[in-house]
Image 1 (cartoon, rainbow, N blue to C red):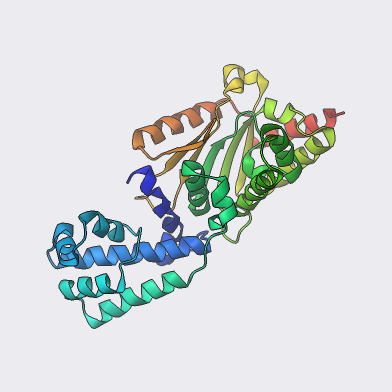
Image 2 (image 1 turned 90 degrees about the vertical axis):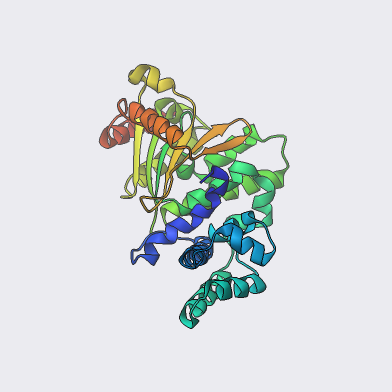
Length: 313
């Protein structure tokens, strides 16, 4: 599966629900999962009938790519296409009813928050796709480098970053960015939250972003966040040497299910880049492991954050 097909991973967060487990899942993830379930069932019926994608493409007078798109859970078939498929596959009354019910259910779900026009206007390409992947994730391994981890930033800290980094943008775009970052943080507090394993540099904690008052509130927010069982925040201290200046942020996104490829997100000047190549994921995991060899443990990290807060003017 290419990274550009990875938006279907939204559905993977719901996979365990289908298998009887409870995992975090958004409304949109449920919708995409229903689409995936329909695609998988249509592929199963086709294979059971001994037909290839090319065979059914000829019957539907469309390309094999269109059939593949349906079977990969990227689109629903039209009512006419569905009827032709089910007839050609020799689907039973029960099988027909199950597919139709799955389609009806999938279409009944609402849209995800990041599908709002103002969010789509702000983020493009991989930066936009990242929102859906994060929403569907089960676990994030994040190195935030010179910033406080994005999912743990306060509004005032975000506003200070935006005021500097996006000063040439309109006030509306800056506010939309702030609201989007804050909205993303819901993955940590929803009913079935994802697990965050976050590393950040000591320099990120000592930079007085927004002034002493804003930074003090940010550090206190980090301390409160570490009380959540699903958040593991560790600091790479100055004493770690070269590891303490590793300034390229990256995130490894893991999803439920052993067969679901992890995705690596790396921050670039023009936004996020996503990779699901297995070799790249392995390299990034090794890099994350190398960094963790130099971190303070959780208790030591908490003590350092407390010390930094006390030192603020």
